[in-house]
Image (cartoon, rainbow, N blue to C red):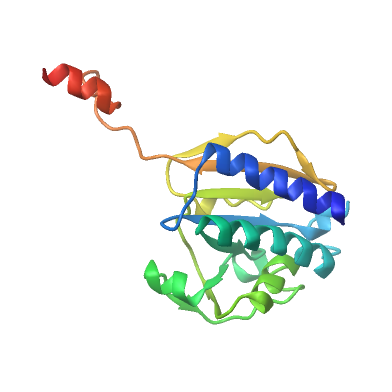
Length: 187
């Protein structure tokens, strides 16, 4: 479990290096604890793994100020567990369900149990995401998602992918995307 926590800390640190998240941001996390322990997704969820990972994500959230969103499994239509204050801040409507390990997943169920005032919301647009075990968090990221390549490519036995987002680039051949270049062209 210690190795798992150390790897999770490295993964979070690398994401934060690429996407410096703060109090205006949301990090979505999708986790198959079954995959982490080397089983097929949705077959052998682990509340122990969920608790260990939650502690790492929560500590990073508290240190940097960003909000957390934990994606449920497909049995709850990939709804997300967030703090009520986060849902209210972003005007995300609450949906009615309580995640449990067999319907929601061990990570979402564990987060729901540990958060101060958790609610489920149907969809969000997060600023960055960590996908542990190929849970497909992309539907909950803002456009445009930019891959972040972690040096730790597996958490336990689960494949890890990450992404940050950036604003869409709009315009054409004359568009300028850097402020310094825009200032130079105006003088």
